Length: 376
Image (cartoon, rainbow, N blue to C red; front, side):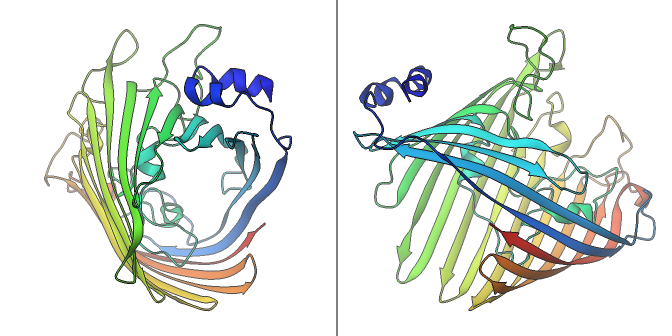
């Protein structure tokens, strides 16, 4: 515990000085996670160019180790390590790894995690376990947008799981502020190109900043969760990367709930100049959906739209102004027991490239999945 306090002193000095007390109980790790697999079928657009199966078995599994303890002065100190395993690519890697200190003055997080804009974002209701959004949904494995289409997610994650520092204020009348900072490290969480103890740049940006304002409460019997967020990613212009353009990312989202009904969605606007590392994603995206849950059942219906500049370097010919994606999905879920869900999903995708070439997109694709999820 003494070693942990010394390590965090460089991040939140005031909190750590106040935490110079012993914990009532030693920090111990608990095991948790989930496993899900589904059978999927799809019919891609007539002109879709990539080799695909019409049927597949896909899945996703994650295991996390969570530990926390409360110091004698009331500060909570904790850690979380989350590993992905059993995915469709058979990848095994640490997805998240971070520590936190939480108390009366808010919560500070450091490690391999996403920024505060993602942390506070609200999603359109989704009854299946394929997740909301576009690129952030596992539906991309069933209905891909096509090799010549750059899509933007309504909940875009520009810095992904890179190492970063986050801070969230205490809630005041339901409102909360947050901020995070990400240096130019690998978007997977570490400087992959570093071969010594030097600090090597690895990401396409120099540093990234994020801030978010959220509200959570009840208004007239209706549950309300809302958020607005902003990302700034400073461009790089050095011997390795010549992408000096700064990227600005704006997000807003809301979720309303009342007697089993839920309505929600989000909007994302990315401003990425042609000389930036995210140039192809310059544009906007939004989603909206509705869900209803009663007892062990839940159903949902949602729509996602994306409109971006597209990758002019790889596909310079322009017939249409934008890469356009329209995505409709339906989901259903039934709880067979505690932590055991049977679910299904259907979706329609229309994805068109700015080149006007149908083979670069995926126009009129239909797919679905039936799966089982186990939470433990």
